Image (cartoon, rainbow, N blue to C red; front, side):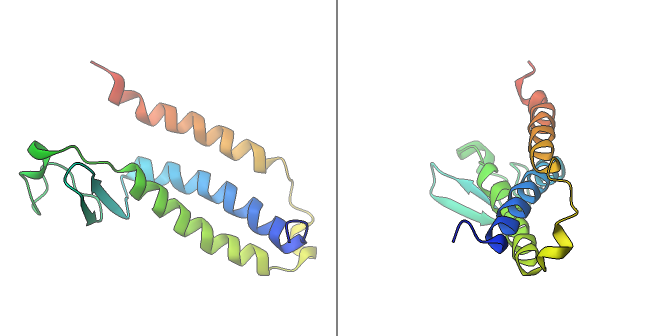
Length: 121
C-alpha cells in the first residue's frame, strides 16, 4: 500500500498541508476544541480565560490549545490529502517535489516566531 502512487500523493499533500494549516491555526488562534486537563473539561472552539462562556475557568486551570490546533490542521489536511489521492497521476507529475521539504521547514520557523511572545518576561 505504501508504494502506490495514490498513497504517495496523499502523504505528500497531507504533510505539507498540515504544516501550512497548523501555522494558520496558531496565528489565527483557531482551535477545534480547548482542553482543560486538570478539570477533565473539553470545550468546542477556542476559549480564553476571559471568555463569556465561563470566565472563572482561567482561575481554576490553564487551557491547552495545542490539541485543538493540531485537530484543526489535521482535519483540513485530511480533506486535501484525499483530494490529492483521487487526482490522476499525470496531473501531479509536473509539480516540483522540493516544496514537500521546504514548506515544513518554513512552517517550523514560523511556529518558533509565533510562540516567541510566550517566552518573554
